[in-house]
Amino acid sequence: MVKRLMFEKPLGMRDTLPFFYNQKSKAREQLKTSILSFGYLFMDTPFLEYHETVGKVSATKEQRLFKLLDQQGHTLVLRPDMTAPIARVAASQLKDAEYPLRLAYDGPVFRAQQTEGGRPAQFEQVGTELIGDHSSYGDAEVIALLVESLKQSGLEDFVITIGHIGYVKAFFNELLGEDEETTEQLLEYLYRKNYVGYREHIKLLTLNEEKKRALLELLNLRGGENVFADSKSLARNQVCMQAVNELKQLYKLLSNYGVEKYIRFDLNLISHMNYYTGILFEGYAPNLGALLCNGGRYDKLLPSFQLNASATGFAIHLERLVESLNDRTNGDNRMGIIVDEDTHGQGIKRAKELREQGYPVLLQHIDQVPDLNEFKKQLKEFEDLTSKGGNRNE
Image (tube, rainbow, N blue to C red; front, side, top):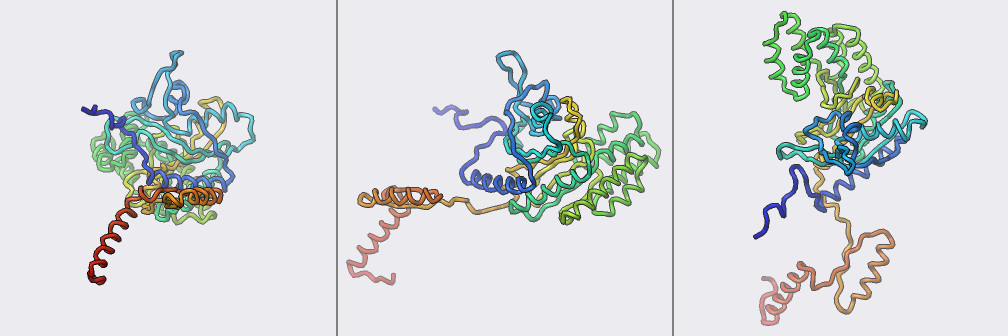
């Protein structure tokens, strides 16, 4: 009897069959072409990192980390994202490099799942990190590159939603003061996009009606340029005003890049990555049902590695991009040469010539080609029929 686990995989793990593998390869190369065109350089980091360094600053919850012990007793983690490992490299091996650094990556990351739920525990990210640029020009470059990369992959129908974590936190701080528990709860509702829960929670707060009204009006700060005026009207302090000014400047720069039609604003936007400090953004595509890409400014992560530098970047979930492209072609560009006993030698020679020209060539004996065998069978039946005087028009 076959053991049950023989054909099963660990929770959240997936096999990548040839059809999807080819689609991923094509999308990956198209993304990399765009990223390289902006002057970014690709690098890689180990799958395994120390929990005490990369694991703790990755902003991934402990229960979602894959942990193991090495022979020296150190706790290791499978990298849960690429930003924290690259920050480690920037603060060590690249600390004396000329800034700003324009780095890019492509590789798998790992996040444990408690239940299957269709969520992967291993998936591939393609992304960039712009390190050492604290300006709106850096934010605009990264977002414009994200848009161009998605377009280069063949995706046309998508939207990049931009927010500012500084606005939300300063807004809550002004209205809720030192009530960190309530602040965290409201932030969690916004992150989950559970706006019903957000509204119901506000009803239960012991605040005056004016503050409750302001907290509810925050949910309306979504859309196009109109968000700027509404956000300033609702702003309660100078930090909020500065955040709105940064968004306005960013939109102007993105318009210079000609990508404004893909941009929306949402002052409710919250990320589970708690190292974001300013501009943050997410990308969505129709019928995908999950986040396509995300990124933002993280000015406090590199100081965790004793490097006083700001940074911004993005990550594209490659498998989800392939799903959103809805490419029905199988990507199989192999050429086929069918041989028999007499033509086998000639077939080998011809296959070699084509391979030297860059073509993938499959050499197959005619007896091992099911479709041709079926064709030969039908042909023989037809010949038998005609030889007996059958009607050729039947």
